[in-house]
Structures are given as C-alpha cells and as structure tokens.
Amino acid sequence: MWVYEKKLQYPVKVSTCNPMLAKFLIEQYGGADGELAAALRYLNQRYTIPDKVVGLLTDIGTEEFAHLEMIATMIYKLTKDATSDQMKEAGLGAHYANHDRALFYQNAAGVPWTASYIAAKGDPIADLYEDIAAEEKARATYQWIIDLSDDPDLNDSLAFLREREIVHSQRFREAVEILKEERDKKKFY
Amino acid sequence: MYTNRKYYEPYISPFDPCKPIRMKSYSTPPNLYLGFQPPGLEQFSPREALKSGTLWKVFYDPYEKNKEG
Image 1: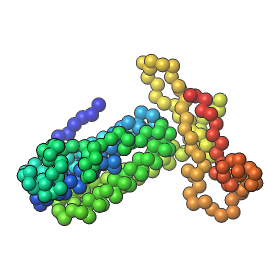
Image 2 (image 1 turned 60 degrees about the vertical axis):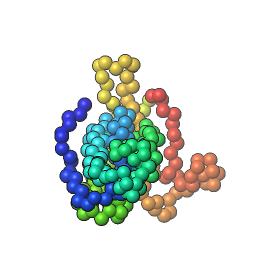
Image 3 (image 1 turned 90 degrees about the horizontal axis):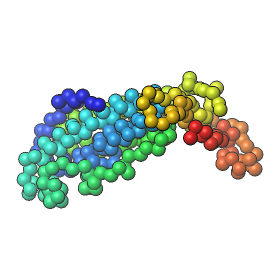
Image 4 (image 1 turned 45 degrees about the vertical axis):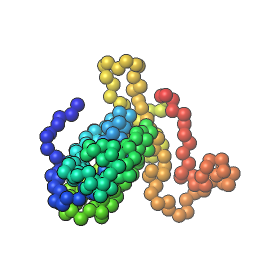
C-alpha cells in the first residue's frame, strides 16, 4: 500500500502563460518514455525480480508517480485558464475538441498511452537494462523539452526531474552489479 | 569464479496456494562481465565457431534447460 503526502516532491512554478508548453509536456505524461510508463513498468516488474532488488523497483516506481504529479501540475497550470482560441493557437485544438482542458494520457502527438510502451521480460538482466534505457530516454526527453521552453521557473523543475533520471539510471546499473555478484552461488541439481 | 547462472531464494509466504519453488535462477551471460573485448582472445576452430555461434570462446554460453520450470 501507499501513504500519500499532499505535496509535490519538488515545487512547480510556471511564470509565463504559454499553453504550447503543455503540448510538449504531455510527452512526459503519457508518452512511451514518460512518467506513467516508468511508474507502471517498475511496479509491475518488481514481482518477478530477485528479492535483493525488489525494494529498488518499488522505491523508484513510487517516485515516478511523484514526478507524474509534477508534470500534471505543470500541464494543468498552463491550460486551466486558456480559452478555446488560445488552445487552438497552442496546437491544442484537437485536444480541446476531444478533452476540453482535461488531462489525458497521450504523447505530444496525441497518441494515447498503451501498455506496449512497457516491457516485462521476466529475465532480470533484460528487465533492468530496459529500465536503464528508459531512464536515459526520459532524461533525453527532458532535455528536448527544456530546449523548447523559455520559462525559467518551469525549466528549474524540469532540470530537477532530469537529474532524478540520472540517479535512477545509476541505481538500476548498481542493481545489475548486485545481480552479477556470485555471493548467492548455489547448488546444481 | 564466474557462473552463467545465479540462484536466489525468493520469499515464500505461509499462504501460497501452490507448492513453492524455493530456488529461482536467472541467466548472466559472459558478455555482462567483459566490457570492451580485449585483443588476442582464444578462438574456436572455424567448425566449432559455426556451430556455437561465436568465434570467441569467452562469449560461448551454453543455455541449459531451466529445470525448476
């Protein structure tokens, strides 16, 4: 089970009214390398991974939900006061036609989130390498969104999230090292 | 010493519905440990190489059927 703290992991401040940034941020909300995919990937893989690294997947998977909340907050702040005309100008006309200002799990191009974004091979090495790759792809996505954004406060929060991807990648790499160790070497049948 | 399969004992609940598998294992093929391949490693003969899928003995990893299921 989870205990919920009613606050964000890191503050989210958006200082310029630029709803087009919401269109880009959606990539980290419901995209293939976004926070939803990350959270569900790790929290699902943890059942069939060796006990030594279950806790890591639980912790990181949980943190991804905290990141998802931050992204949602950014998107919401950028769109809640946008008129339908402003949504259209921001490239969110199609979004408005379907969802009004509601958030939706889709990528920046409007493709809905799908479970095929997340892998679960059952082989611990394959799954952890998948996770490392996912973190690097998420880090890259944050870089591209920061490149597209000229809001310094938003970029501050995005830089925090990018840094967390780096740390997660490092921890997954350490998990691989743990699984490579011979200390559990056991009998042969 | 390197082994290409690691074993661990998963948590077993007193309330598991099925007979527990007490020992689980996973594959750790040799390429995980080598890094950048150094020069001058031992090679298979051409005939053996064709059969085993690699010219290099260090990468050869015969996959044994996983008996625990």
